[in-house]
Length: 377
Image (cartoon, rainbow, N blue to C red; front, side):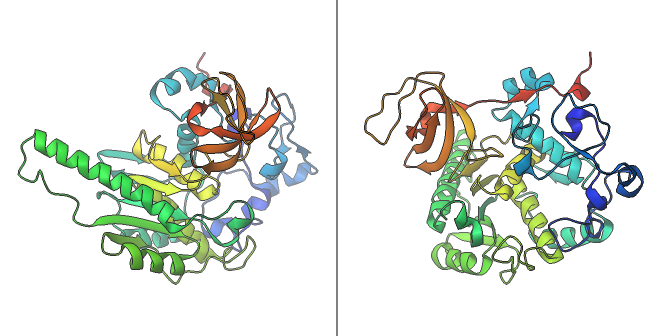
């Protein structure tokens, strides 16, 4: 919304009051030369941002739960880029958010024949950069074939049921099977001597808020097939949102490292109901160019408001039992409950009926809004 309205983004109290028990400047450089003390405080109280026609120079943005009815929220891409994005990317909104995050983060990634660099807002300070790079260097992520999983547990069960580890590994196995088949096929066509060689030991990066339990289970059940890469097995991320362990500097640094490492993976299995999974997917688009199909979510499809996602029915459908709902081609369907056996919990906005609907008969309802800052007319 800051980009859309062409306003400078300033954090309240320069970012010293936020979720983590550290100051913003303990990890990041300040985002602008403007300061809350000099450029906002003298004008208190500040009017809440209400929409694109608002004329006040200084406005306040609340938590995202209080801004959900506004335009230009995450998962909206500039209409100025609509033609080229819809032509070249299946998830234009994810691509755009990836570029924003790349710019915000000052992240650098060299690998797979490409080099992306940006240095803008969420720039790590020197101390944080050294800590992050030191941890990442142990993983050697840049030049190897590696998949990843993000397993969200602890308090997430309040929002969605957890998935067993075998659900993640099933999709990882399928991806590696396909990769090995493709390598063998290409080598065979080129008459290379190594045409029958498969990946000797599959490599998997594991990120989770319950590392001890998840990593132990993975090593016990899949250790003969996979080499597991992960942060400290003894790391503690707390059990609830405001747990001091979760809000510590160590937890924040670990989270940043895991997000960056997952975004460098060739393929990731996670749950889009998790903020981490969505950020990973967005950063992939900036790191890897086109990576629209490089993440598989076990529960919801990609969306900021993941249990309110609007999709479009691509075909007429007649319910086969009382648990399902009908639809006509073009109906707007709200994706309300997670995927299960090829169906989703859905709400048809035309009929006002709620029930199961085939996930395969839904396509993305792409969202575009005008961002005047990108207009070159």
